[in-house]
Image 1: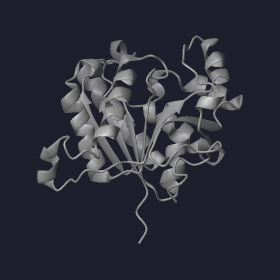
Image 2: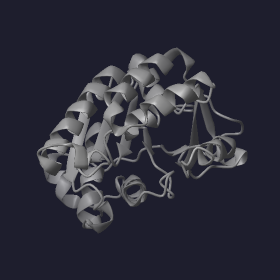
Image 3: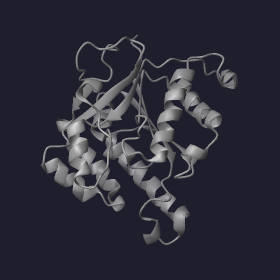
Length: 256
């Protein structure tokens, strides 16, 4: 019996999953891959805060609802919200936060883990923090000396095989900088995987629309019209399968 394919996606805020690898998530969900999303915060101090009656608590409720709606559209069946303070991920206890991610890895047993790269794409401190925590958890999950308390819950050590970071090619990052969106780009030789999401672009845009209150939906529609959203790009940070010889078109290459 073949092992069930499982993808764990770990991000900081509601909307990261849609604006980022939404098409890739939709593809794998449609193929029957089990997709688990960890969202570290509820996004309660976003740019919308001064427009919302009820303050951060009400905004957290709204954004969680948007996240759940977008997750359903993308086909995410398993959503975990850690509930850390928005804008405060760099201040959490790293041992405790890493342990929570390790526990989920040991539970859902993903072959592939996906998160932000060390620069967080935009340099956002929460993005950088969740990248660091997820990378550490990827390395710790298979170590029987790490978080042994999990074993009491029959969660054995487990080693995911591949860790990917979401990536933007340099040419797209430069285009967005001209639109006053300062993002970090990767050189071509740093990008291991390119996924054509054309069949799933409509699904991605529907998921992004759930988060339209964040104010960037119109710009994404314009980028779609310019053909900038038809592919998603990934940097292979760690592989226990060895380095791919050529550009991949599948995060699960070598696993199926």
